[in-house]
Image (cartoon, rainbow, N blue to C red; front, side, top):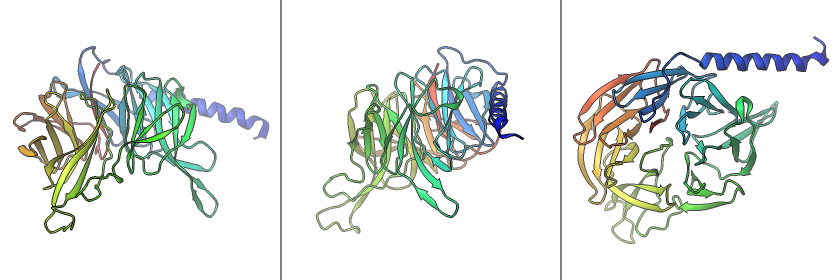
Length: 374
């Protein structure tokens, strides 16, 4: 092969691979119906499923390119496109939900020899025109790796199948889930919950987490890997903490509490709220769109709490652990995803199980689910 033709051949091969990927996604299946509610969730080997929440049956399945993981999905404001962080945390894909066609693809790595991963960080601007992610890059040398500074990468949603960042900014370390407010502010969960101007890169603190100043409280413990888009327009992160009796901070007499940090994405108002004694571990929780004083948590059990009274109201026993809890728009049903390949559906009032929806393929693992109305 002569060197003068190698670039042309490489370009032709890239075009062939791209066309194959698009064709592979264009599976037969019904388009979404206007005014209808759906849930989207991914699983192994690399599927994107849509569930009809009125019938609680599988509506259609789209096959995704490359590799699975983590399957963090965000739905565009017009509810026509799902954006998925996938391919071992290294790429973002946009899928047209009507046709299953791939309409967007961006690799987080930006130069030769670089590997970049995002820890669940993907968000969409409120007008749907931009996609955000925090890349954690490492430069791969012949005999060593060099960890680089994280960067916020901003993409145009219409950037196509080889999208490059419109702009990049330095970002704090340890950023995980993100969401955007109605005013365009980007909120990022890290050591604290940050607020970012996506045009200038300026970073401030919206809610102190590691650095909170709450008298008679220990530092909070936070683990949250699921970016949820609830009807309540909440950006919520769970925490646990010790609440001491006095300045002695005696762990033997401390109360251990569950709480949540929350930002109202419509108004930007933030709050830090204890809602329950720490009696078991929850991976996610969500407030009811019907009654925001009710919050549902899940891991090994499904539970419902009265927030103001910090009182356990109902318990739903599970067949196995689930990682993610979500509610439909009316607040009448609770959907549990994550771990295996079944979606469990519970009555929101009684926490009695209504049904299980089995998904084609394998485990959902830590993929995120979103419920939305077209």
